[in-house]
Amino acid sequence: MAFDSLSSRLQMGLRRLTGKGKLDEKDIDDMLREVRLSLLEADVNYKVVKKFLADIKEKALGEEILKGLNPGQQVVKVVREELKKTLGDEAVDLNIKEHGTTIVMAVGLQGAGKTTAVGKMALFYRKKLKKKPMLIAADIYRPAAVDQLVTLGKSINVPVFEMGTKVSAEKIVTEGLKKAREEGCDLVFIDTAGRLQINEELMQELKNVKEIANPDEILLTVDAMAGQDAVNVALSFHKDLDITGIILTKLDGDTRGGAALSIKEMTGIPIKIMSTGEKLDAMEIFYPDRLADRILG
Ligand code: GDP
Image (cartoon, rainbow, N blue to C red):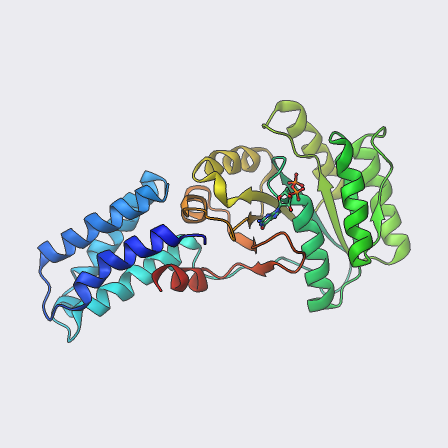
């Protein structure tokens, strides 16, 4: 399971404290060393680790904690709070309008789980908000991408707008949005092209699509297994597109935790959605506190 090794290492480091009646600075330093190792092993960015430890130390050495009745447990509480803060603090749902059409543009590297996530979100918000979704197939480079989206749409009974792969993404999006309005679809997801690597041509096309669609959300799909590499991917997409949220995928795998714990702190972009499996109902709003609880047990 995801975070297993981080989780057991952190818990081990903290367990030593909870049994103690009194704590001194050395106990705290020993604990911080364990926490540091477990975070670095989980591939968390070193800047994030540094800040995380400094914040814990400052709070953990506070008078009221060291002199409190159960200092060990209070330190665990401090770590839990910091973990939650690093993951983004509060859950942030998608910005979906009550009235009028909401446009969500999904971007990301190939294979991160973008197309799957688009289908999941359509299903999720149709159920949750009674929206009428439409999917636009604007990935014209990967031959199977359009077919994949069409098959996905059929399986969840959501209309898919496509014009094959011979027409420009810009044209497809222009026509798709027109169609969505005609059909009264009020939640449109644009599935854009994913490449193996970021390149100028891809970015330019995405910028053009953004200009045409004027989306309410631009969501970047990030594979949690990518570790802190995900941070660099996010920063380059963010620079050109002003990403509004992250979809963190494959949290059901054996990810070590680096991406989840680094990305908000390093980019400022909130993780809004998490994907936890290949099935289309395996998606949740991202709750930092729930994940922090899961990690600390
Ligand atoms: P895209 O290229 O970004 O559009 O990626 P796809 O949506 O086609 O997904 C790539 C592969 O990852 C597919 O085999 C999906 O079934 C799989 N996948 C997507 N999301 C998840 C997830 O949350 N967990 C797991 N285990 N697999 C996923």
